Image 1 (cartoon, helix red, strand yellow):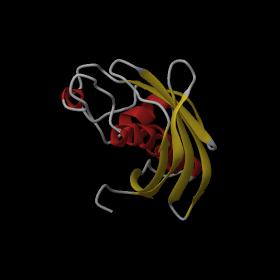
Image 2 (tube, rainbow, N blue to C red; image 1 turned 90 degrees about the horizontal axis):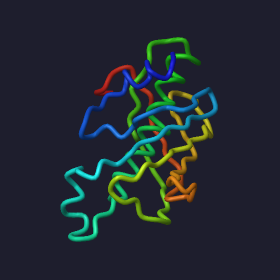
Image 3 (spheres, rainbow, N blue to C red; image 1 turned 30 degrees about the horizontal axis):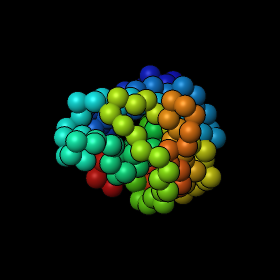
Image 4 (cartoon, rainbow, N blue to C red; image 1 turned 30 degrees about the vertical axis):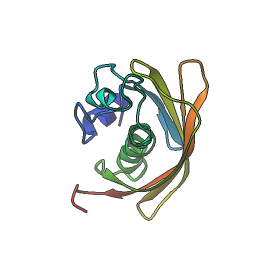
Length: 148
């Protein structure tokens, strides 16, 4: 499964798609990027007159790149089956810097393990200056269908 096929299998669409590109992917990890459009609706209220990207959206971006894209790749390529869906099960994220409207970020994920359909990864998000914005772990279950 190539990078474009993985992007096509993502179960999201705008305005909730937070993956623009996958730069690298293999059985050990993934690197991808996303640019936060300055017109995204949540910037209108988070925060008034000083918008920043909510932490939950940063976490979702890391999960989409670092967990879902990698899970699709692993279930389709490593296990030799159809690409699965990945349902987020847990996160532990530390936030260091804000992400502002219009900023491009890169997500780097390293697989800790993938066994019994559970994927657990270290993830970090970098801004364009190469500074760590947030980092932590994400976990999820690979399923054959969206409802379980």
